[in-house]
Length: 257
Length: 329
Image (cartoon, rainbow over all chains, first blue to last red; front, side, top):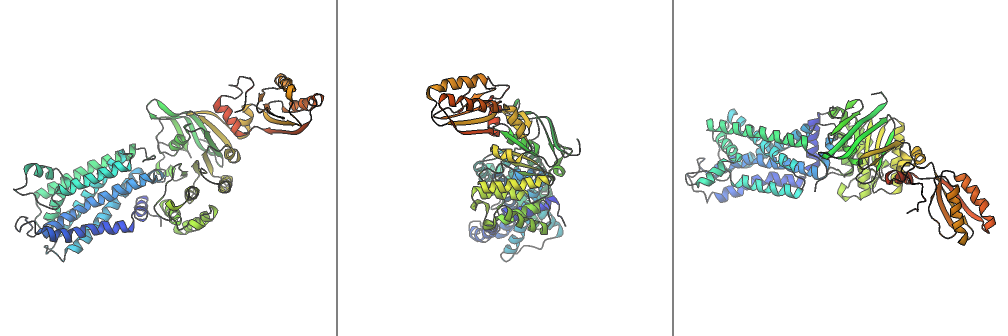
């Protein structure tokens, strides 16, 4: 039986471009962060600073939310590797719509994110004692990861469609990733002691909303702020998706540096 | 569009920058089972033409129909009936064999057919020894062979080949050209760009000569050669240097030769093109003995496609020619 074009492209992404060693490192990295940072940073974050109680219980949901960034980076990398090796051009002259190729990149990234989330939870369970998740909590976590993954994947792809140099793309991507990780609430919370400017920057980062929503879901304390955060993330995802689709429609997929 | 017409363009043009056309006023037709060569110098617009016709670039003006569909609207359905070997190298990060089967999978070819075709292509394109290597571990020629082989993994009605034999040795080139000719005999239509005139002469049913983005002429190789001057090249060698008689000989040739272009004229040899070669040969063989010379070698042959091409794009053709004697480069 012939698979639909979209799924054929997704399978091709996994077979062609995801190097096994890179996948092990990508999946292993967040788990490593939870174990190493979780135990080391605990000493730096005094008890009672985070609402979750222990720092580990604070960190794990944040690191899970970070999987959406990891997925986005994967999508951006896949796209740029295909561009660099002229496979974008080859696929565009094949029996596919450009939108299908974009959707396949996003779907690959989401699958990657979800596997990452599953692994993180498996690693985190022995270290923390989180309350059992309700169906609503789980739905919010998955939806947040999906929307956030869509946002970061299409954001990076949209940038990638406008560039003609791999060097420029990977430099920009590293900068964005650094900004997203360290200026979000993934690793530390916003508290009364947080400088005002830093707090403003943290709240300008979509990853902060995603991390907060996932954390609240894990702690069974979802509220209207989380619904709002999810709404903002969904809106941003639609905007970046539209930008990426426009980028695909208008880009010249010809040779790049 | 008639049934046997696979491709038709009318006044097709593409501008990378508004107002600056890389290709313009292109009128082409291609029939089922026909091989059309696109010939032109670097930057003549060949690759742009292929990129527009394969829907990578939207036409700036004019229309193009492929297999009855407008290229602006054909989408995946149209592209599912064409194959494209791009000028740039494009590969997946897997072995040679996996590149073939993965590409077939992308095109929806069944696993069994893909496996059988991969074996056929590996043998045909002599990739047996490198089947387990990844593309970056191959030589330039092997990569090119893989790229052509991969495109032949799926069925199609029309195949675009943008310089498919670049970097290939003569044996591989002949093998690929022979296979393409065979496929064309079975009904596959082919658009083929190349710099190698001999290749175009051998393979193409018709040739479109592009120059600075414009189509100069579309015709058979034979007609192009004839249209250039209708001339043939005569090479003659005497038993010794004509010496002081050379001036008289050249004057005689100028006087009696039609559309003559004199080339090499050193030592005992002389070479020229003319539209009345038989008459000139008779003249030379009767002129030689009274001047104490005898003819030791005589050769009359058609002008090559390369000469015709140079004449067309260099402005040395019959329409543009000055009629003056021209030294060959």
